[in-house]
Structure formats: C-alpha cells, structure tokens
Length: 456
Image (cartoon, rainbow, N blue to C red; front, side, top):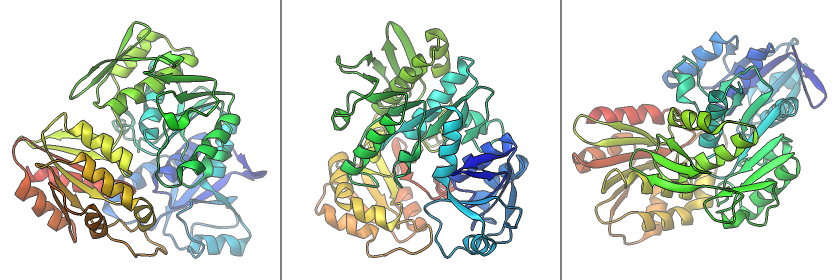
C-alpha cells in the first residue's frame, strides 16, 4: 500500500521525532493501512517514552536511534514536524540519498483528502472535541478513524497509545492545529471552529487561517458564542445564544459532570466545566450532521472516558485532589482553574510554561490572567520553562512572569526545579486542597502528576 503526498508515491515513510503526539498518530494510522513505517526519536531510551515506543513497535513500526541509520534507499520519504531542525542527522541522511522530505501536515493533508474527514480547529479544546466526536460516532455505529494530538482513555484501556485509530468507514476525525500555520493545507469534508484567542500566533493571523479552512470545507460549523468568530461565514453555528442554529441549554453544571439539553434530549458528559459543556455541544452539532440518533448520542456522551491530561482528576487518601491538565495558554489556564474551584476553595496551581518563544509571546497575558483568577488562599508555583531542544533564545524565565504581576494577594513563586515545587506543594496543601498541574509538550508531566499524587 502507498500514499500519494505532493505527487510522491510513498510506501515507506520514516518519521523523525516519531514519539511526538502528532507524529505517532499519523505513523500508527499509516502502519495500520499497510504503509511501511519507521521512525527515530531523541527520547528513544527515556522511561517516559517506553509505552509509546512499545505501542509503535506492536503495530509494525521500526524504531531507530536518531542518527540517520533508519533511512535507506528503500525509504520513500522522510516526515518531519516544525520542531525538527535542519541539522538533524536524519535530514542529513535523507539529503545525501536524495530522499524527499515532507512536513507532517502534508502527510496528514493527503489522508484528509482521501477520507470523509472532520477537522476540529480552535485555539482551545481541539483534542477534547476531536475525542468526543470520535467517541459519539463510534457509539452510533459509524466506525470512524482518528488522528489526534492526545490519548483517548477508551483506546488506552485497549493497550493503545490512544491518539489514533483505524475504523472501517471513510470517516476520519482529525485535530487541525493552528500553532504552526499548517491547518490551511487541509481540505476536509467538514470543519468545526471552536474559539479564538491569543495563543501561538496573533489573533488576526489565526482568524485568516480559520477563514481559509472553512472555504476549503464542504460543510462547516462555528461557535456562535465567540465574538471573535462572528465575521466567519459558515454552513451552520452552534452555541447557547438564541442566534445559534444548533442551540443548547446548560441544564446542570456540576462539580464532576455537565448536563446539557438540545431539542429536548439531555446529554450528560462525565467531566466538569462550562468549557467542556461547550465542547460537547460542538461535537453534537457535528454528529447530528452525520446522521446520528439522539438516544445513541446521549448514551455515547454518558460513557465518554476522557482524554489523557485533560482535567484528569485523582482523589487521594488524605483528601487532597490532584488534577493533571494540558492547559498552556491563558484562556485554557483560566478555564482549568475556574473548573477546579468547583472542587475546592483552596487552589495550589503548578504551571510549567512550554517553550521560550511562546512564553515571551504570552508573558503579559499570563501575568494578567494569574492576577485575575487567583485569590488570597490560592497558591501559584511556576516551574522552569520547558526546553524541548534545538536553538532557542533563552532571554526569559518564569520569575519574569512573577515580576510582571507585581504585588498580589496570593502566594506566587517561581522555583528552580521540581523538587522545590514538591516541597512547596507539601508545605501548603491541606486535606481539602486542590493541586492542579498544568503544562504542555513535556512527556514527563504525567509522571510528575503521579509523583505529586503519591505525596498524599
């Protein structure tokens, strides 16, 4: 089997950085489809990567050190992401052998064109809505495929990485990321735009990308409640506002679940938060367009298992609640913290900024958001900025964000390492406290969340 990418017939693709969430998802999908897949990763021997490595091997992917040894004349193309630098040994070997180098988004765009695909876009909530749509379509017997940026617990429970699945129908649900500007390459059957806020790029630039994605889609839906999207022209709209074509009612938002009503049918989602109620509404809007039955959708939403590191809650023996969450921009942090406040009046927030460039871009918004969402009894602990490798101008640190906040009523510190963070948590947590760990990109954060949990 082969896939045609940019007019190149590829029957053997090598992925540099194959353990990354976006790369491993495509690699698995292609392997299941019969394409010969190999890959390398700089974290090949890291304990936190062992599960991903073993799952890739089990579905037929060959894993190599990141030294060019996995690339031969039999390799059709090398697949890289934006994070891979020109100096990488795999790239050098591919150039030496005259092998085509493709961006991850070009490979995904080719898969999107081959399928009746659903692209989920927005600056917040993409992984969750992608997961909910996939789960609901599955519950309704549509047998969809999935390529996402996060692991679904329902798939993890089957021994999979959880960020990809190969179904029997032509429906493919994908997460369309705006962070590197590549979502404009996709021409899906359907697209859904969730929201817009300052994240990786200026809002005006992101709006134009969303506009182009809609133009390249046969059907589209946008969030009527987000004023930033109001000038987009779409097939339909969803929201709580009366102006929405697909209107929902926030029936009951509880500490551990959300219940919404659409056209007289109640839908329960076993995760909390106003933002997750909106995520469910967006997913229902899409699934209704694909002909799903209301009662089957209601059963599917009630059985939703969630996504890895998306408000993952653990109740400890000592009464402390620990939450592990992927929040990494101001709006996501606000949503996560406000949802956590429904569980406890005492919040200990631990945040690891992801990358020097994004932190520099959002430093003022971070400071303003922290000042707005935290109160007297709350605690904020900033970990050192996560460095993923490569070239980066390291002219900013977490202490700079603390300094930007000025005088605040709550306790806010920047620590030198995770050991200091653990001590901060241990010294400030009480039986009714809620510790919420937030951050993205770093695969070791889940392990750190477990370490925090073990304290209590």
